[in-house]
Amino acid sequence: MTSTSCNPERGTDVPKVTLHYPNGEVRTLSVDNGQSVMKAATANMVPGIIGECGGELTCATCHVFVEPEWLDRLPGQEQEEVDMLDLTSEEPTECSRLSCQIVMSPDLDGLVVRLPKTQR
Amino acid sequence: MTTNVDREVALPNLMHASAYVNGIPHDLFDYIRSQPGLFWFPVEGPITEHGGVWILTRTKDIREVDGDGERFICGLGLLHPMMMPMEDTFMGDNLMSMDGARHARVRRVIARGFGPRMVAGFEPWIREIVTETLDELVATKGPLDYVPAVAAAIPSRVIARILGVPLEDRPFIVRITTDLFAATQGEAGQDVVANLTRVFQELFDYVETTLMPLKREHPGQDMSTVITQGFDAGEVTLKEALFLHQLIMNAGFETTHTTIGRSMWLMLEDPEIERKTWAALDEVGSGLVVDEFLRYISPVIHFVRVAAVETEVAGQKIRKGDQLAMFFTAANRDPETFTDPHTFDPWRNEAGSLTFGAGPHRCLGAPVARLQVQILFEEMAKRNIRLRMAGEPKRGYSNFINAIAEIPVEVISGS
Image 1 (tube, chains in turn cyan, brown):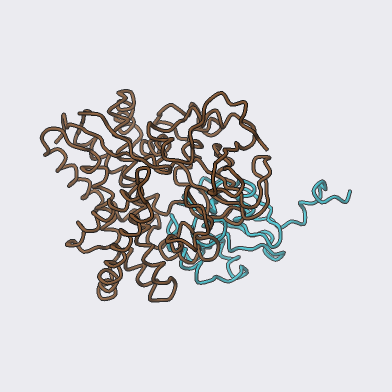
Image 2 (cartoon, rainbow over the protein chains, first blue to last red):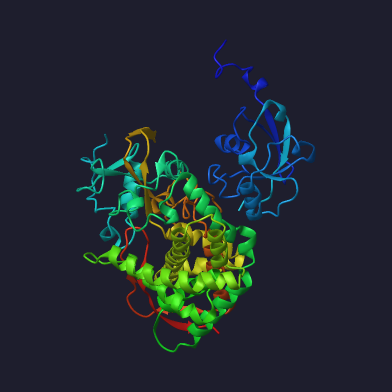
């Protein structure tokens, strides 16, 4: 079988992100390389990430807390993202990022993030 | 192409205010929603490029269109009859008419003032405004009009405070807010554009020559300071800054005023709605009650988007330039999203309301609007304020706001 969409093995080389929910639930999300965590989450209707503005950096509803060991490996922050983190529903911490700005790459496979209780 | 020849109901012009003078035609929207795909509504004249509009009534379809600012844009018009490149009109510098990077740049400037944690801090002073308004209400002997007394008074006072208008100028801002609203409510034949332009000019003169210089000298925790600093930092042009003031006044007023007015009207005309409201306030609190009123009332009837590319929605081929009218009021009665959608049920806890839209243009002021109406209901319950209808209420005249003009009432109890 060569068709990517039908290949049951396809999932193995697509990077994975682990989402920890405030209620203790844990989910795994496949995110294609080059795709943002927010886009993958909303495309798969994963709860907890809204991404209202579609990635324009105007809504702050895709807030996540990145596990500290992953922080340095993430793409850098634009000033707009820093500004928008002031507007999250839950108080941000040093580990806060907007998941629309976390674009997947092979070295982010296995990324672990925690979700806030509310996004707005 | 869908044709409407088999329809059993005569359609009023859904894009025109005359269709809403007696209320929202929900039976019509139910019929349209029951048809497969999208519903083509012919419109005569040069308002549309292809001789009609797609009518969207389902939550899913509206979410898709409103959520995709690349395929479906605002820059070619949002409402009939003004469907044209917005850049060429007096609304070209209004955030709601912008798309893409320009929209994001301008929106970020005011988004700063409306973050959920910031809005939560508005609670004490909004409660003061509500308390003062209710004090005036219960002190009034005999019949009064609930619209100016409460429905308009609360949001206009809240807006003046959010903008950071000095106390002595607040009556001016309250008047401009109501004038702006009145100008959008032109009866057939009135020149809406001329009326709006005149009120805009009066507002812009005040903002540019009085308010912005004041905010430079005495910056405050308010939106005018945020906008003025955004302008001084080169993030927005002067026109964009002036229109942001106008947007806060218009958008923050019309919808909240409608929600406060219409919720009282519904309670006074339907004892079952009144009974459920007071009971649910007691049992589940003001959040769910207000969310249900917002769903049931849907202050914004619809907005239009224009397809920027050839595409498909709900299996229907959409041509570039096609107009899509997103009827939020119909989506909020979509049985796929809400159980028993035409029943007012403040205990329902179903997500998916499109009252505030979805996507890049979703209402920025949503948390402020909810908070005002919540506090109003909490205070009325606490003070046991009860009213009765004292005449014939009147609807407003608009094709996009579920507008209320007059609600004659009398206070029968409360302190």
